[in-house]
Length: 334
Image 1 (cartoon, rainbow, N blue to C red):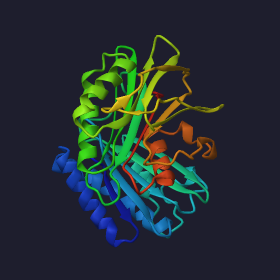
Image 2 (image 1 turned 120 degrees about the vertical axis):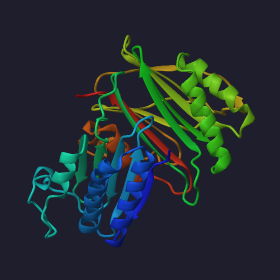
Image 3 (image 1 turned 135 degrees about the vertical axis):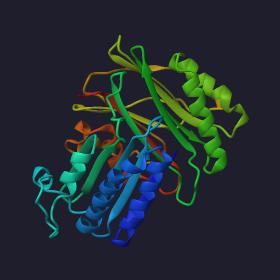
């Protein structure tokens, strides 16, 4: 299920955001008695977009894969928050309001995160679960999250992403079906299904299985990364122009992919091994997002949740002329 994405620039759009988010939560299996939590969080965050940023911003609601949880994100390019701790305190406001918005959202959320940089905007995350389904950390020891959106004007997304873990092994996968629209989406869906059915394979053979599955489609480009607990390294196989970067406090390193098109022509499937430490972050994305970003230009962002990091990169580097997918993963921190 694709995320709900809405522009919020004036107060009339706050109510629309609340109604659309309410409908999505019901579609994801939330009970009527729990939907009010979603409505309150969306209302408070949408109001903040209108109050604190000229031109408003964007509100995104992301359904969890295989579960009822929802992640609510707001992104703006406003003046930013100079004192985040103060802004989270009840009673503080710079807009003449009661000042209970962010504090109330943090109390209602299973997970709350915020990143703000003076002059460069604010990103807020609130992960919500219905009663009795509170989200927990992943059993495979990695925290991962991603976003994918269709090209402007399209309803189907030709990009796909997936991740899975177990038995001391974690796998991340990003695919970009050629072109955009329905046929690209069919190729991406086939690739994701093939990935999910072949998690037992090493990365080289897994990508070969995706290649064979895409022969009847228009094809695509993709990459898979494997992290195993029995070695301090990550194994990566990329075909085509999926961008992948390992970021540590010391800097960033681009991962190597081979030219080719899955389902059509691939010269070889070769894995490359790279060092992995507990403070490493993996970032993978399609060419729907520019690769000109530099995490070092966002002090402290690498310590934020993968979902918030992915959202900030999407906000600042998305291209409107193609489908977009971005996946971020790193070791789970309690």
